[in-house]
Length: 326
Image (cartoon, rainbow, N blue to C red; front, side, top):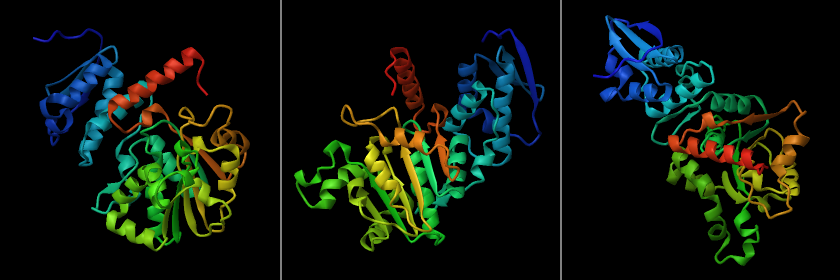
């Protein structure tokens, strides 16, 4: 028999119509995740959910979030539990069902795309409000995917006539003439993550047709020079690998009725030694322009495998100790 922990006790009265398996999960997997993270015990007795341990109050907050999801007929998965636990660790509270109310658009198979974290929700709101938005943060926070989703939504609502996605082909030094094949053959390997997002949202066939009509363009950053883009949503991905000159060039391509979204991770700069990141400089130069928004994602916003969050945190802590962070 499992030993009962000593410590605080928190109780939540169960509504008569609640199926406990919906909250606790199959094999109590949801509860086991919470117990392991907070070092508490959770069980049902006499119509109450009991949480015992030093973190009982945080455990109660998490279980209340799960009950709210069940009440709104929403599926509880591992990612949501991990995220709710992360918020509780920061003494924050947010009802997850509010996130699911904000549908950005639907994929080509009809799946609704919604923000999965508070940071993602703020990012989406800032894109709706501002013409230039920077999304800055670690891998796995959905910066690029959400930017493409917002661009798709704007196109479907006829707010823009074109979608342009650009990336600095830093691995090739943007000297694409030295690579074999035509332009598309040369740039495709560096732009593949952008294609993946487009295919997910529009479908492969529709994406190809829109590209043939040049409604959607996926290009290396070097090919943006000399253009002025009206009525377009323009996304710059991997912006940490732009030079100062490239960033200024990109930002000045903006035309009337256009929107720009710039994404990057300043901890993953791959520029040659001695080259300063255009994204890092832009954060300093443009910070006081009120029409430009900077959204900073955190580790808690990572929505990939739970290990990704731990890996990012481990590297961040290492760089802080070594004094090597940019």
